[in-house]
Image 1: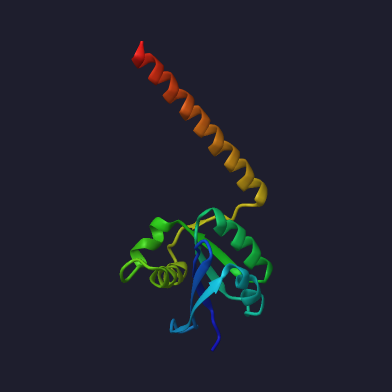
Image 2: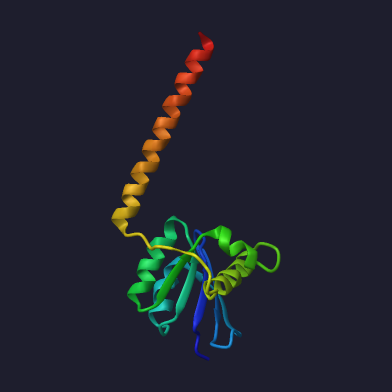
Length: 143
């Protein structure tokens, strides 16, 4: 049983893992808590890992890459068509595992800690500008 591809559905505390072998047969379905992730993947042979892009996925991509795995991030909108049943964590992990192997899939580049920090500053600034514009429009309507 050699796992070649893994899809991970990230959550706050419990992550769902779905792994397949070279023939596409499911050989791993597992839930891991946040504290178990690093140890599990450090002991696993190198494989392709797919994640939906979000704030924490960049952290996990960097961490899993350190263990020798090939990690690819995908936008959730591109993974959605691969969900076969109702939306739940196990189905999402399976869909991510399926989507990461597609040859025409578009991937999101993994960001460094510094890139993520700059993006958070830009988002905060955009929020302040939007709030200021809204407060100006409220004062005009009361005049």
